[in-house]
Amino acid sequence: MRSTGALHQHGLVALYVRRADDGPRVGFTVGRRFGSAVRRNRVRRRLREAVRQFLPELASGWELLFVARSGVEQAGFGAIILAVERCLLKSGVLVRAPNRGTSAANGTDRHISGSEHGC
Image (cartoon, rainbow, N blue to C red):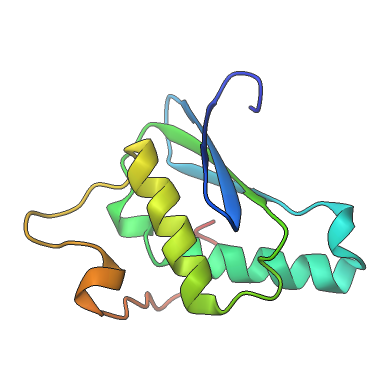
């Protein structure tokens, strides 16, 4: 994925995207530099929840790989959502309805209820 996908970065996360036959499919990578498995899993859960906010708006036919960057562990959840949103917008994978704007711009809190198995 890293060698064949396009890279879009933000201070807290990096996003690799490439075309796929189906999808969107989403993966997460948190390196050992974050410490114990407990700490890595916490970062992964926070990233997964941030991405889950945007699942209904993701275009089909893409594979996405989010890579945690240093600082994401200490960042607030709002900052993580904003970083994920900016990466998705830069990559062109996020499809928005007209006059919707970004969640940071309009101040909405988009929470999707249901299971976490979407990511």
